[in-house]
Length: 67
Picture (cartoon, rainbow, N blue to C red):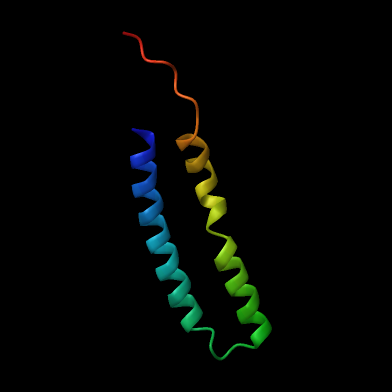
């Protein structure tokens, strides 16, 4: 049951992350190119850090079920 829950949480998080990155990124059009580059690199790779605990939880070994 962990994996379906984790997938739904990841999809919701990614939707919010993409929306936030797009919103902030659209406001950076007047900034120098190096600032935009740093922002998009951080936005592109930064999503994994908040999801690491969720991924670890999702893939954790579950105790065997008793009959």
